[in-house]
Image 1 (cartoon, rainbow, N blue to C red):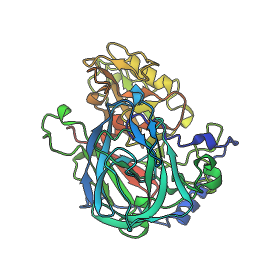
Image 2 (tube, rainbow, N blue to C red):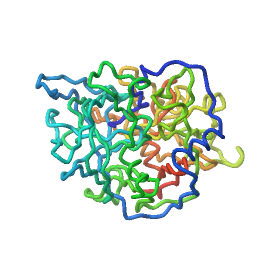
Image 3 (cartoon, rainbow, N blue to C red):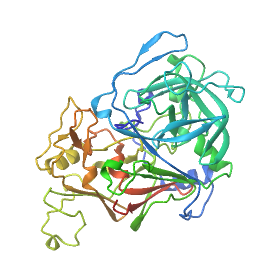
Image 4 (cartoon, rainbow, N blue to C red):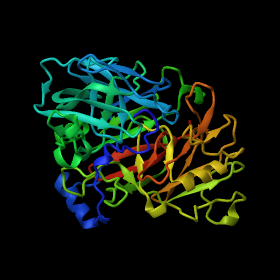
Length: 454
């Protein structure tokens, strides 16, 4: 996704409000064994099945396209808080390679049909269309894609499978001349295939037809271990020793990519969203509970004002002249879950947290409702900010705390944005550029290790 994906609210309009249901640990164990099978912890090893990622800038406004009947469709302009970067990667579909945007917060892989103005895929005899099914997905930033499903050969990092993907015949998204669709890496439960051909009939809890997306097909067919890892990097302009042609990160299937890391590993169980009045568990045709997104609950957040030079966690307050704040009002309200979203540029946190971070800038930042972010001077002094997960504190580099707002005006914004009170919240590029993240589907666990300073 193209930046501000505060959450993939993917048609939550259809999620019915139900009483709160706590997730029983024994039920989760049973769920893992039923859907994946008992597995020993997967050893983290470097693999050759990785490939470089490149950044896509999304600085344009409204996009235009054509539907299948060739009538013009004007697509909605991207809101300014959606501007930023997405990461794209090559994916071979049939006999042609396309650049698809990487998304860890959605599951469907889709590529554009010739009726959409971009680098397109025209299905040939290799594409076996699924009868009486349609593809219909809406993203949290107002983008959407609609079309048909079918099976074809898909190859990623040298791993080839015959799997189900979608061909978008209508789409509203900004490929910016580089990307042709999306590579979704989340769970099967939030795939957006529907029975029938009338989009107006689509309802996740009524006519959804879940299927195994690309990565699930790969590991279930034994082509790769059930784990992948992501390392996002800053653009060359922010890295003194990085060449212009070097990749902007890596996606590795089955293990780790070639990036330098330091310090201890942190582990956190992948959690199922609660089924309560907040409705961010999506009610689908599969029974609750199901894994949907890669969500965790951080231990806490550490914040110092802009005069603090290091966000190390002190053992005692007297050990540092910097005043650390463990958000005593709400360290993590209601143990709110955080989604790892590789398509989001910023981190989206509860309002009281994002306001506290903004106030610690020099000069202090104030949320702008019209822009949808906290504007800051590009030379502002950023606070020291860290996230503690599994007992390990991960400092956020100050380069990621003040970022270009991608409006084309040469102005900047805070890397931490206001997620309001809409859990699950989001760790996007602001956090993910500072860690190597392992998505261990086999163990239902996320692992993090700090990137060596770069």
